[in-house]
Length: 479
Image 1 (cartoon, rainbow, N blue to C red):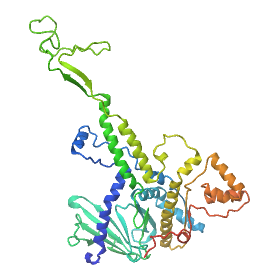
Image 2 (cartoon, rainbow, N blue to C red):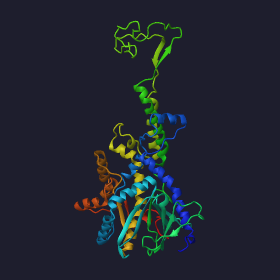
Image 3 (tube, rainbow, N blue to C red):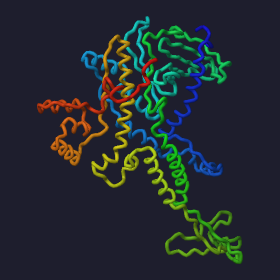
Image 4 (cartoon, one colour):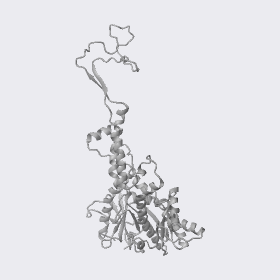
């Protein structure tokens, strides 16, 4: 540990983290609507800069591809079969503000494709354990690496951040293994060449540079939309959003010409310009009331019935501004294309269309519901393992069940008529209610009040045996 070069993982892992950052920053820029416009011509760029349109905030539609899914990802409960341990889980959530932090983690996972939850013992000033800390981390500062032989097992993780700036800049980096935590620091910017890097062990805060990890697994839990690393849910919206930005910027550049058209006058080369021009005064008429040293008032009256007598001009007119349809019709098409390539229903992007019935809306939302339920399985399995690890730190052992609010929900007359028809044809009530999007706990309570018994499991739960019953292999299993 005294020789930082003894660990070959450090520099490579740090560079992998740095290399991944631009894609995450790009995903964040498209979500926030802060993408810089790209122009095919430098002349066009200069023209738009002249009108101060080059920094115009975009009309952002790309974020809808993320928000439409995140808005339906609501965690309902994290429970065990032991009521006393349920109280422990609730306390963990309260102490770590997870009711506020977890929605942010889910948004980051959907926006970036990856996000992390760090679970580690909380200690007092003397180092004695006092509880468990559960901290949400974004992929700009954390990256988990998986085993070469077993890609489903976490090999290690790196967390890196910067402190200070310029001459005082230092780069901190912690490596987390299943059996230890190694802490390093680098003075100044880290060079790409590992031979020039000068990583040294860090213990400047009073904690040792090498900390044992007695829990046997990497304490970061990876929430991701794909494997091994996620993909931003709005990545397919990048192209349509750039086209929309260009259309809107170009349209706004022509708005002034629609309000104040560009006019022209053609000179008649054969016109006789020897006659009087402007006001009728000269040095020989000092009593006409006009000062020859100052400009006089125009004789061109703007009254509706006035006749303009223009001398020396053959023809006047104005240039037609660009037709707004040249911009607005393609705009609608690109918004539709964004809906198609992202798999988000068109009514999520445009709510001004014709109203559709509840059944038609549910049918249009079916691909959205399926994606939400897929994310619930992915995120739910990871969340379950994070809580089980937290219980392990507290010397408790229990199977954890994660329950989500249903993505589907029937609340219209036609939907309830369909439910009633299913029940009348012999479908069990609990099955019909579950398909309508109601929680298993609510269904059980309703049927218990009616003296009946449920016989199905709520489909939006992540049960104890999620790996076996759903065929989901979780990469969060430690090496």
